[in-house]
Length: 207
View (tube, rainbow, N blue to C red):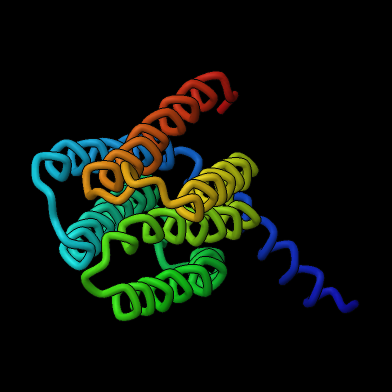
């Protein structure tokens, strides 16, 4: 290894560590914001009985809003730290999360087409989203902080458990209110709990 190659590798490692620190500082407030949006969306969603297509469209809108808020908060944190946002580490995180996101979109499309007009779609959409989201978060954890990998596993396990209930297909699960509650508890309250925990850890972490 030449001196130039060694220097380049050290710069890459330093960039990854600095980016992880930025993500760690921004993740707590970001997760709290996402959790608040998810909880609010649950409260709105349970007020009406809706179709699977409406349910999917509603939560897609919530997801787009949550991603926009998250990017804005992380971007603001990077600006305060006088650091660029779209760095090579940031691109690695986005690339790692992309395959599960694409899988979620594809699975959602197949479910809505195959189960069009059937309440069974409301059984399967949340488990699919939970597993795919957990995989995306777990992948991001390899480039940010270890706690994200644990959070990813938690969502994967929640999705698998929800899938087992969906396979049993009890009648009371075939309702939009149940689906909204499941989304609110996992994506809403789950993010609130994770964000609060990260803020506590960040306060205990030496600067």
